[in-house]
Length: 300
Length: 269
Image (cartoon, rainbow over all chains, first blue to last red; front, top):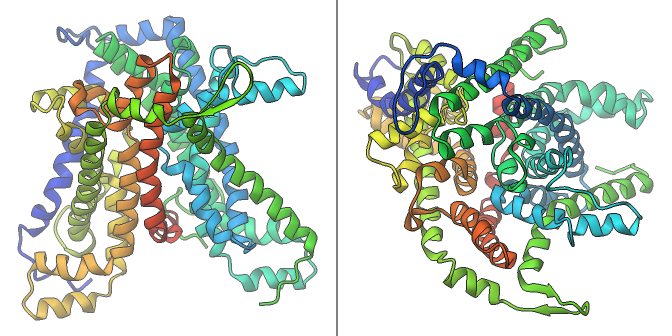
């Protein structure tokens, strides 16, 4: 580090100021305030007497919040699916079949599709009267499924949209890792008599492990924070079919109960934080080349 | 290289790829189809672009389209500029508290926007920005991830490049503009592309801070159409296709910036 001696004393401040102001005001300070609001009865119209843990008590004793929280946790089931589909898609692109360069863009189409557009398209497929899915099920003699009105289908419907919209992005992450596996290593293993599956299991998989873990963690965190897919796909379904963020939206911006909504947000934050810490803790204990959490350490 | 894979393996890959392509393209294709075709009672299919005319005229989508383009462009530009500005001293300058600042900035990644929407909303109202396009842009004009990616890119640039420029009398601003930015163009382009994708799709925040029809972005307008034209879903489908086309064009044009190695940087540390 030899450079950096010649800059003006205030230069770092000037360069950093915009980012520090935006992230500081909206996220750091916002976070401090949300924690405070959650302990008050702040509303859209009046504000804010300290009420202690009342909001939390109310949330945890009413069935609605608990139902939404359980749904949010159940939503995590989309994580292994998304990682699996993303891996298969990445392997298709990396397999060098004809046209595989195009596959990358095609798999990315759902990623760029605005969520509301994706949700509308899926709503059309889910339509309980003449949607494609129920029509197809009918051919097989299977009864109509209440994709948009019945539990647990409502949650599954939203999860499928998340899966559809998300796998292309994670494919890109995994593709980077797959392409970084040295060809010589794979060929050496094959020469030593390893089967196709053996090469995958013992050469490819270990070296893309960090990327795979990143995909799991990032997709799990965004599953907990899901809003758009749930809000639009199963619009009209009762709130207790939905997840925590749509409930926060309802409490804050439809009912004006900022204190209660903030408490719901804080509970969600604790769950997200818990998941992140769990990941760090899991990452510490394993000796297989992933030294410090997800973003730390070298891939190989 | 000579490929020794047996034909069976090729066939398997083609089958898997074909299924995935159908899944990826299917719903969007269905949407386009549903916006122009209707099945009448006798089972025949009639084609009509009436829904587009109706979406454009009655749904008044011209304004939202322009708003979405403005918001998306502003968010992408600011995301790149502000992140690249913050990353420069963090990567290249020595000053007290540098690492602390970096860690604190990264720590904001832990705070989901969904958790802080209420105070964010009040701040926006307090600043007098409620129901303006600026309200959609400002809170998301920089992200911690963007700063992180830029810092990674700047750290790769050889010190000699910067020293040569300094030798020629360039100040920090000129080094940043003439050395750092051009040499990290791939990362900056990727960051811009992902900002565009995110901003174009964003629904929760615009829904909260925008109220009047004239300031609605496309997703907000479409969300409104969903309730309003409940009887004719085709109008909402037509509006959705209108929201889909520009971003697909961006994807087609910017495909080479969709780089997995930049994202990989987040993994490799």
